[in-house]
Image (cartoon, rainbow, N blue to C red; front, side, top):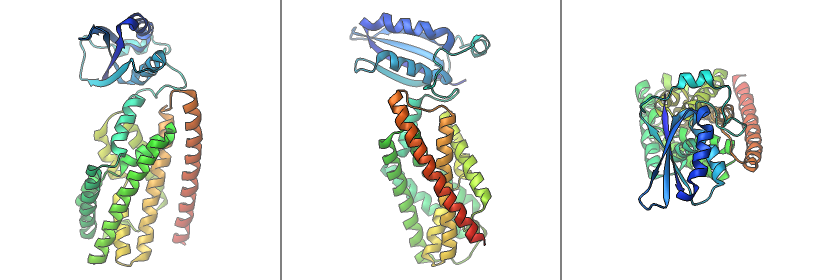
Amino acid sequence: MALRVIEVVTPRSDKDEVKKSLEEHQPDAGYVFWASPLDDEEFLSFRVILDVAETGNVLDELEELFAWTDKYRIVVYPAEATLPRLDKLTQEETREHTAFSGEGTDGGGSISREELYNDVLDTSLLSKHYVMLVLFSSLVGIIGLLRGNVAIIIGAMVLAPLLGPNVGLSLATTLGDARLSREALKTLAVGVGLCFALSVGAGLLLGVPEMNRELAARSVTAYSDIVLAMVSGAAGIITVTLGVPTSLVGVMVALSLLPPLIACGLFLGAERFSEAGGASLLFAVNIICLNLAGVGTFLVQGIRPLSWWDKERARKATLRAALVWTLLLAVLVGLMFLRAH
């Protein structure tokens, strides 16, 4: 099982209060902890080793205990192993309920809300590395689509960083975080704009000399593409919340964001407007379904704010976003129907 270490730096005067709280919940959460003095002798460091599934619940309890001030600092980092082992099987057999369970806790088996936020934030912020990856993956994708080479196209999908800001947008909606939402939207817009501009330029210069199988596949949208995008989006969110980034490679391939965007630009640059419309429709379906599935999956996973006022704001933001995404998807389904007839 995956392990985490929670290190709590607290004033020495608060030792008894923190120790009492940790001891009260220790049998249910199944962790071990100890305290160590720091060099300045004014602070103590409590280290808690626990299963990753309990991390979010324990962090919520600690945050409520501290009523958050600058006197405290909490750091979370992974642990490879601990001896003696944490007996997870015994905990599951004897535990009737978790002391930290409640409406505001994170979903069982997922990483903590704070870890998730930091992971998603890293992929949602605009940076020069993001721009470079977009440009490189777009060039690889253009070559792959023009040559009809599946391996090259898959390579472009793996390189493309467009999944990150979409996950960030879904998480921001679920948490009611307007700042993260703005950053994710900005990053996504820049990535889509760069890829599209590069593809249109390639279409103007090179045209589409041959309508190969890979280009043709990106010029039409089937109803099964909606199901595929929904399922792949949900799988991607689960992968993120479980803290297994290596599994995202499969999601990037299954949820095709880059190829239809590149195909749209190529067709538009080559003045093949009907095919460009079909590719843009496929790209829009994938974006909308990814975000709709993302918000729903985050909610099912139990990812919510801690405080009640943040929960209320997040609930309203989630309802508005779900309504917007659903209406947009309904419009796209209507367009798909019209194109088919």
